[in-house]
Amino acid sequence: QASTNQAAVQPLPPGSVVAVIGSGAMGAGIAQVAAAAGHTVRLFDTRPDALDQAIAGIGAGFDKLVAKGRMQAPDADGARARLLPAKSLDELHDAALAIEAVVEDVQVKRELFARLEGIVGADCILATNTSSISVTAIAAPLQRPERLAGMHFFNPVPLMALVEVISGVATGRAVADTVYATAAAWGKQPVHATSTPGFIVNRVARPFYAEALRLLNERAGDAATIDAVMREAGGFRMGPFELMDLIGHDVNFAVTQSVFAAYFNDPRFTPSVLQQELVNAGFLGRKSGRGFYRYGGDALPPQV
Ligand code: NAI
Image (cartoon, rainbow, N blue to C red; front, side, top):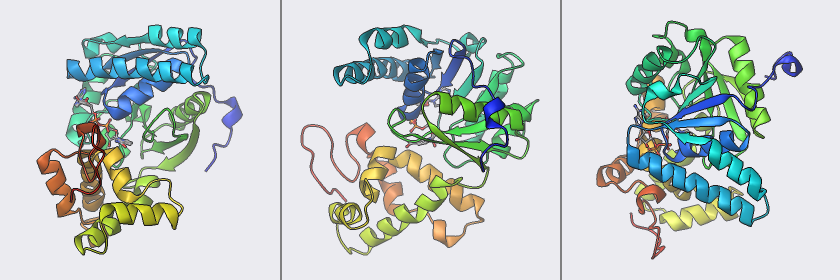
C-alpha cells in the first residue's frame, strides 16, 4: 500500500552518513548507490579482502558509468571520496542509517544489530537487506525494535529499481516511511510490504526456481534449454538457472531453506538437493566462476 502521507515524509538528508555492513554483492551495490546519492558511506566487512574488493569494484562501477556518459566525472570522483572503508563496527557510530547485507542467518544478523545498537546514536535507523528472514524476528531482541525495518534491494543493486520496504510487527511507521522516502530519493521504486516469509518477490519467485530445478532433475532439458525457453517464450529477462547463478547458490539455497521452515515445511518450498550439492562443491555461480554455467575465460554451458 502507498504511504498515507508520503509527501510529508523526508528522506535522509544527502550529506548524512549511511553505514553498510557486509561488502559482498549486495552491500557493495548498496554502498555504491548511497554514495552516488550524496551520502558519506562507511562500509564494513569482517573480511578485509572482501572490503578491498568491494571498494575497487565500486570504483570500477563509477568509471563504467562515466564511460557510458551516465555519470559526470566530478560526480564519480565525489562519490568515490565519500566511500570510506571502516576497520571496525565502532567507526559506524555517526550513521543516520545502518543497512546490513551480511550472510542470510538470523543469529548472525541479530548479533550484529545487538552490537550496532550499542554503537550508533538514538536516531539511527537500522535496516536489514534480508531476502527472507522475518524482520520481526531480527528486530525482536533489540532494545528498540521499532527502529528496524527491511530495506530489500535486488541484484544488481545499481540497476534494479525495486526496493521492498518491510515492516515487522514492531517497526515504527515513521521508520518505514523514512526508509521508503530515502529509497525513492536514491532513484529507486520502493514498495511497502509487511514481513511474511520471502516478502513479495522471493515468495512468488520460489516456484520459478523450484520447478526449474525439478525439471532439470527429471531431465526435461538442460539448464541452457530451460533458460532459453523462459527467456524466449516466457518473456523473463533471465532464465531460472542464469538468475540463480547471478544471485549465488549459497544465498538462494539459504533463502529457500528459510522460506521452507517459515511455512512449516510446506513441500511446495522443499529445497533442492541439486542446489545443495552446488553449494557443497563451492560452485556458487558467477561469484565463484562456476555454477550451472562457467564464467570467465571459457563461458561454457551446462555443468549439471
Ligand atoms: P555475499 O556472500 O556476497 O556477501 C556477504 C558479505 O558479508 C561477505 O563479504 C561476508 O564476509 C560478510 N559478512 C558475513 N558476516 C558478517 C558480519 N557478521 N559482519 C560483517 N560482515 C559480514 O552475500 P550477498 O549476496 O551480498 O547477500 C547478503 C544479504 O543480502 C543476505 O541476507 C542475502 O539474503 C541478501 N540479498 C541477496 C541478494 C542476492 O541476489 N544475492 C538479493 C537481495 C538480498
